[in-house]
Amino acid sequence: MNVQNNNIRPLDGITVVSLEHAIAAPFCTRQLADLGARVIKVERPGSGDFARGYDERVDGLASHFVWTNRSKESLTLDLKQAEAMGVLEQVLAKADVLVQNLAPGAAARMGLSFEALHERFPRLIVCDISGYGEGGPYEQKKAYDLLIQSEGGFLSVTGGPGEDEMAKAGCSIADIAAGMYAYTGVLSALMLRDKTGEGSRVDVSMLESLVEWMGYPLYYAYQGATPPPRAGAAHATIYPYGPFPTGDGGTVMLGLQNEREWLAFCDKVLLQPELARDERFSANFKRSENRAELRAIIVESFSTLSADEVIARLDAAPIANAHVNDMAGVWAHPQLKARQRWTDVGSPSGMIPALLPPGKNTAFTPRMDPVPALGEHTDSLLAELGYTGTDVQRMREQGAV
Image (cartoon, rainbow, N blue to C red; front, top):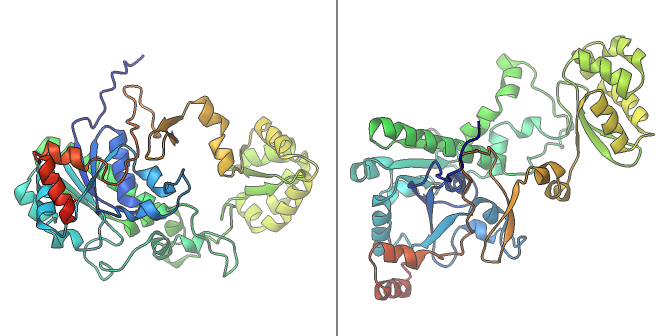
């Protein structure tokens, strides 16, 4: 059945106010904007979200900021000034959602706790994102992504086998996890409000978000059992499953999941069907225990083949496999190109490429508006609230906006 694309987006008419910086909250609110929400990003005059200054890799703009802040309106307010707080109060009066990831307790000290806001704006949803959540002995601890990767056990199972070979994720995985749970938490709170007529609070902890993603290694180490070892880019408990070098200097990633695939791998990829009967490798746990010996056999077999030839054999088997792409390879990925997953968005530095949001919906196209300059929408937002040009100029001279 073909669905008519009328481009009515799911969150059209929803207004989100964000007191945000870095990654977790901006990633949450950018995805709300993708679905049509109006996101008003409140930033400090003069400097704004500190992620704007992380680097200058995207035509002079910061890579993190470009990624997480398209389709938003930037409103500069110095919330230490009463008049600026008055502006925020008026914005919140028309909002559906407030998302914030300020330092622990900062929002409450400004009168922006859920309890205080609920009295004034009973339909407002408040999403608080922090490192460790409200309460508990860690409530006030500073929490950056790498620190949460450490506290959440991620580093203990990631990297090479040596004591000094632990490795962080190459992207901000704890921030991303928290941003995703904040995003889905806000969506569920909006659905709940449709049933109850009242707003609710979503309390998202980076630690809890990442620990949820650690469910497999946690249960693998249940009741003091030995945790999965660090295995580099290979799977810790399934083998062969990981990267293998090829004769042309390339690397191929492959993965076996069951005994049927092991038989096919020996026969059609290694061209050594007799290896399937080798007692050292007759079950996954044995292959994992004897991975050094098996790796040597696989590496020797692949040493006369190019990466493309190995992948052709794996595809014919069929055995799951992948190229080991760098960033240039991902930019040029043929599957993303074939599915037309890239578009362009505006920015203060001109048009830049952007990946369309995952989860393509046939009923609407996502919002893909520009990345805002600092304070770009301050004047228009204040005019919308009834402030005159003279008012705005005075507030700007006072540093309130």
